[in-house]
Image (tube, rainbow, N blue to C red; front, side, top):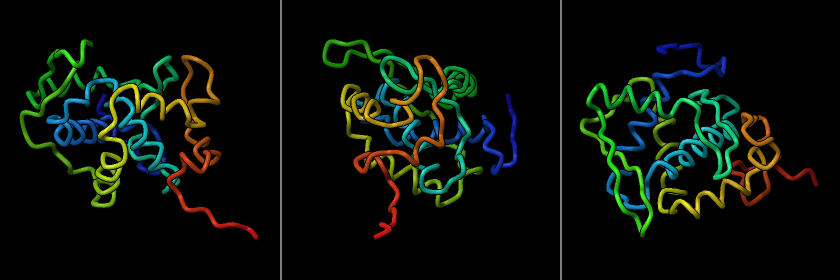
Length: 177
């Protein structure tokens, strides 16, 4: 799965997705609200907001419309690779009476495929959504046009970010008055 396509193609880049996921885990591991569900949505908002702002895909990951919001298709396989490389560990914890799957980083993430602009964008995403619990970030994802306009279990279309409501949009659009 070590496909490294031309970044402009928008195809899935597993190594870049791996670096983004490991970086997000390293930044959120001490936040008790960030379990697997929140990670799914942080990855989603990171990728879709980046696309709205830059009109290119950061990782090219595909996200499926599931009942509890967008879910990255390659999450489990990339987590398995990170665990195999002893970069992260996975643990089950109790979070307000619910079972939560949490991840902790065991070493510094490799950021060699990420530009300074991309790292800043990830940090901005974490600042915007990182304090939300699973219910809050799920509700936020359910307000987003890519999720609303997609059929259950289908992939979300990145192009739909250009039809977001003002509340969900991260891009400054000019008025044509």
